[in-house]
Length: 140
Image (cartoon, rainbow, N blue to C red; front, side, top):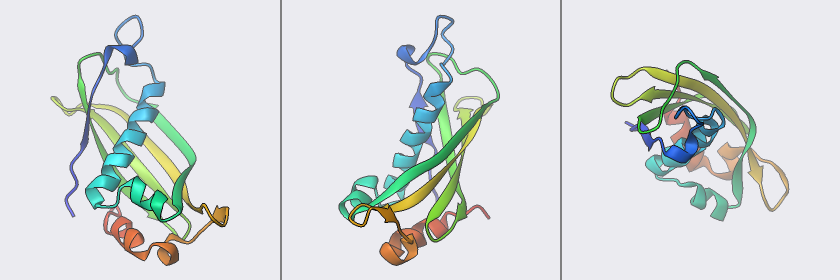
C-alpha cells in the first residue's frame, strides 16, 4: 500500500520570537501524522474507538536535525518499525517539503488498550483486519 506523507504548514503561533518552531510542536505533528496515517489505511482512529480499542501512547521521542521556520511546509513520513501482539513502534521523518532537508526524526510506541476491560489487548485477536493493515506497513 502506498501511503502519502502528511503535510503540515507551519503556523506563526507554533514559533518562538525568532520564527523558529518550538520543539514541542513536533510531537503534536507526529500525532497529526498518525491520525492521517490511520485514515489513509482506511481505519481512522474513530473506528478503533468505536470498536473499543485505543492506541495508547507508551513513549515518544524526537531528535531535531535542523530548524523549522514559520511558513515552511513539513512532510512527515511514517513507518511501522515493530508490531507485536499488544504494541507497536512507529518512526517519523519530518522534512522540508520543498527541499527534502530533514528537520526532525522521531519514534512513538503504543500499546493496544481495551476500553471495556481496562487493560492491554492483543490487536491481532481484537481487530485482526487492523493488525493486518499495520503489518502491511512494516518497514522492509
